[in-house]
Image (cartoon, rainbow, N blue to C red; front, top):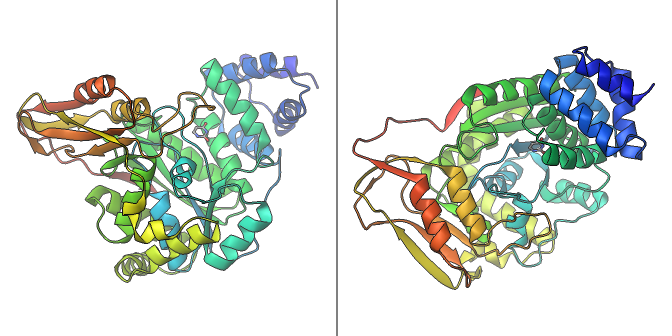
Length: 430
Ligand code: URA
């Protein structure tokens, strides 16, 4: 078999066989397929598309390019979001689900560009270790019921190579390539069930709703054919989720949620995703699972579970009970509305980029993040604002606020009429 023949075949519109996908993935993993040929094949995949059989073959070959964990525990489940702004709900969901009897095995990533990453948020808790070994991860899940760590180097290594090439060749936004990338990593974690949160809107990868629905359908179908119980939610990212954007700010928001005090949209999504995870994990019927979730927040058991997870991974659990201990950014600046009226829309990507400029995110993988930097959102879609009233508070350490202010003002559209209600959960595929 030769890679040049595989590239030509796909270029001419013919689907590739399982053996051809296997040859390609083995070749990029052992280095026998050079980057220029891998990039050429990625571009023809992007342009020609992959059918379902090909998407399944690519996903499974990428999955088996590295270690596949076996957790050997009942009720194992994970959740994955395709990435958004202010989307720190995993931090609340993992302990809620664990407090209700699920076993949450979560391997997460760092933030890049305008979207945040769960690992950076957890790094803001002093001492918390995200680099557990596989055996530590397994025993943390068994003992505590949940663990959130970074991906180990042995997990789906083909994805790391392909993702870097896709990122530099304009071939990220293809639903089969995204499906294979996300599912190869999630299936390698060894969980039995998976809840997917596919974001759509200005702050998401999939700007158009129909593209997000199509991606969600593809992911559900491939995960199911790989033997997993799966549900996908398609949710709105046409404004930031919750009221906080930034690392320690989003940990504080998760703690607020576990204390029953988070913003309505944040709480709604947390409860919906947690309940579905418990249902898929076999804990009970959906209504029963939702009741359990609400009770775990009301009786404090989910908050206690969060502290337990943090402590088990070397973190200072006192921060979970006393979030005022998180270091605050030294400088604060209120961005004030230039007009009076209703907030019509907020370009979530614009707010995400403003938070990045303040130090909360990274442009390049090597950049360091400022855990206390970010944005507190004071007005959301549908809120009324007077001229001169603050729209957001910016938090930073020694940075100019000018560019972030400009981004916030251009991202927040104010108009005369109250905008129509728009639901957070747009559709569910189960
Ligand atoms: N997240 C991933 O891990 N892979 C993609 O292709 C897109 C989002």
